[in-house]
Length: 168
Ligand SMILES: *[C@@H]1O[C@H](CO)[C@@H](O)[C@H](O)[C@H]1NC(C)=O
Image 1 (cartoon, rainbow, N blue to C red):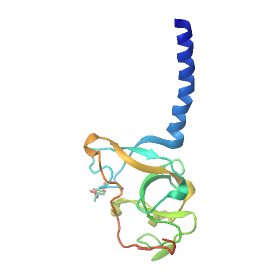
Image 2 (cartoon, rainbow, N blue to C red; image 1 turned 90 degrees about the vertical axis):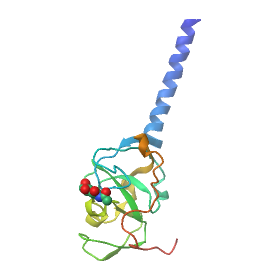
Image 3 (cartoon, protein in one colour; image 1 turned 60 degrees about the horizontal axis):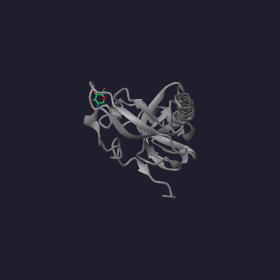
Image 4 (cartoon, protein in one colour; image 1 turned 90 degrees about the horizontal axis):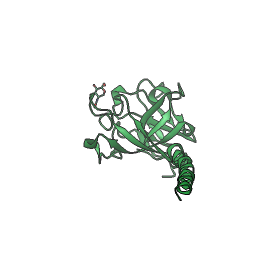
């Protein structure tokens, strides 16, 4: 009976939409990257804006070299994209304008920097950030197709800035 099929479809749709929405904001979502602070990893030229797939993950699971999105510690309405360069209890050798030469990243904090070292407002400006500000990690670039397969795990940005903590 068509009427019944319609009802069934309606129910299925109703059951599915919330699931999709949950996946959307609890597990992953798609986001466009703006700006040049993560060059050459993301947005390699002025004419391209990469679209990325963002995974929400347990914030404790964040690792060095993850590319993450997080709320700006200076303006929580702004979402920034940087690479994790240090995790808790790492000693990081900082650069200008950070007021000290080095810093121990406090517990539950991380140190983030842009791959485009000279054009990035990052932890050297605002210090270590709380893991609570993390939105998710960039899993992969989904658009444009010419950017498929880009290795986000490649270690870019400043090198040898770290004395790793005793746990790792
Ligand atoms: C860093 O950003 C600037 C400003 O947008 C850009 O001119 C420069 O090419 C970028 N550097 C790299 C390594 O991509």
